[in-house]
Amino acid sequence: MKFFTNSIARCAARIGTLSGFERMPDVSFETPLLLVYTKSGSVPHLTKDIFKMVTSEQQLLSVSLPSTILMADIIKEVDTSFATFVNMKEYINFLSIQDPAYTTNSGFQQLDSISVWSRIGRMVLTANKYMELVEAYKPDLYVALCDGDTNINSSAKRVSKAIIRSKTLLEQCLNMHLNSDTLKSKGILGPVEGGYNLQAREESIDYLKDKPLAGFVIDGLHNNGPTVQNISSEQIKQVVHHTINLLPTDKVRVSMGCWNPVTTLDLVELGVDVFDSSYPYVITEQSQALTFMCDHDACENDQYAISVAEKRYKDEFSPICKKCKCLTCLNHTRAYLHHLHHTKEMLGSVLLMIHNIHHYLEFFTAIRHSIKNGTFNQLQTRIRLKYATTKSECTVA
Image (tube, rainbow, N blue to C red):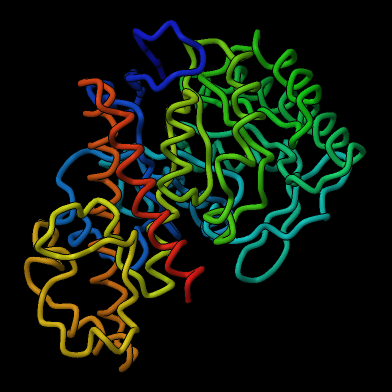
């Protein structure tokens, strides 16, 4: 995998290109890029045919171990790739260790292994076991096994252990990667650990920066799950700025987690290139429809999202957003979504997910466009205003 950018600034919003995927050499992605979040290899609530109706463009899918690890034995048995096994071989896929949409259980790491949780419980992975899974899955891009179990409250001792363990695991993973005929042409990313300790981040980067890696994952800022959407830019800005300032400019930078759009924009401004779409999934699970990109008067959408559970939408026979071109807004009303929610119909989640993933893909299109035409600051101001309005209304209430 190759990454190219014209930007020479270390900490700045930038346009780049991801390309050179062995399995699909003609495919390329422009960054800032959104990884499409999947569970068990599929976009939640959507069939493959419906997802293709949501977007006809090539996408890079985010696949996590917790939602797929129970498939590993059968994938090995039939000797096929994960993408082929789940019938998504026309998409490039990225393998992550933890699921960004669900809170990772903390405190279960051991000397030479990492814990992940499937639906049947805890599973312990050594570097050898993990790389066996990676060889079976054959992802186009993946993260080296690491200890990202740190957050803003982690002690210096916990951070130090995360650094030491991640170094050991990366060394083992990278050695097996380079000696594997299956994997050596795939992209492996190095995790930058260190919690919120700047010196620890420097130690992690000093170890990683000269390794033959396709890029870096800025890890260890949170323990995943819905609460990540409440993390403000102010909390993470110093550590992310310090981290990116030390990373090579010619390698891709990834940040996983369901960051809210305001924080996402601030991370883009700092130079992060790739994110995942666990945020619109989490919003869908909360029975909300995103509206932060809706800035015209016809809809009166002055908040970042609406909750279809609210009684006021019972007789609201207009779409979520009158200017939205998604299948949900073109064919259904807020009243119908309200009805589906209260009758607990599965179609309600399907229609919300269609809208929310479309909305977020449009968001990233707008990000790239704004960087190119010099209006990125205006986009930041516009989105920040939507979230500020919602917070002020909650305060008044």
